[in-house]
Length: 433
Image (cartoon, rainbow, N blue to C red; front, top):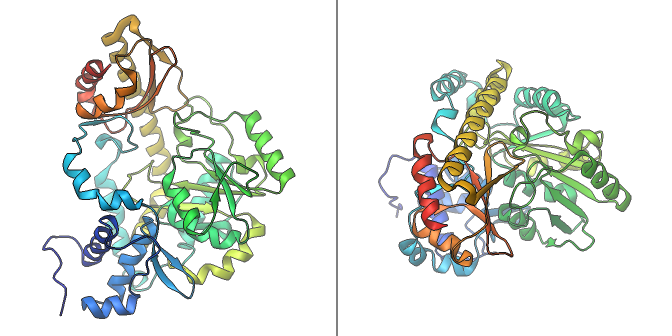
């Protein structure tokens, strides 16, 4: 009997995606449990295999399932069991977040939707090209455009041959685990990066700082407060990793917003392209919903990648790859970065001014490595241990650290809160403080 999906306007593959996602999140499917094969799911739901494959690839890209060679698809550990069991109950009691200062979302004014639609429409006119699946490594023209882009902006040592494209960094990390092989211990400079840690745990890795085989770092945004690694620290890390035979995975997320005056060189460029896997994404520069990421593999790892490449279907939309390629070639990515820097520099400055005007000498605005963040230090905070709880009750979310003297430091991202709402949001912060 054909399954009746909820009647909505979403494409069928997204409804299949939601069907399995809900079962994973509510505990119907447990971590490690095998889900039906593409053929079996197609037969059971009476839909095409292509639809099922697209749904499964999206689930894998978002980390809900993992593919095991010659075995099938299995539920990952992206969400702890106790959270899955209590999802519905928790959601019903969860306060609505009105102003999210911890989000990496985009400002509505940061993106030219009309221009992007034109590029998507242009890509859709390439009928013959869209009749086939995308290249597992990513469309060559896009890899060529990415190579030129990151070589000029980050001095990354690469060619289209070294680049692998995917829908989100998490989907690329699944591939990378197969390429790395025997190494099984990894450390994370930001242990809160649960999407990354979940991938490696699913592949049997241990997350530890004790003599790791691989080091995962985000030098442009380290730790909870996004500190930037200095050039001296980068050279030191490269040397120590090479001496110990450790591989570095450099997640360069947020590098464009680290400093407005001078960008710090990437680890990959300082290491001349050796012993460093460089990853990046266009989600921060375009829209979070445009899931387009890439990794640059060192030459010595490419042979291993080519051995397993055929085992992994391309997760990024071929249409979006074609559109993004032309977008970069036409110079719009460079102008988009300039636009974002100007917009977020103005917003963060405005937010800092509002905070200073609202709190006066009770607040100290601290230097911050990220151009989209404001770091505000408060000498005195009422019941600091309940700060985030009170914030959530008011519809606020932000990152914070409590000082020993009873004060607190707040890290506030300006990207997701609309400019005209900043003053209202700061008044709510005042109530919480």
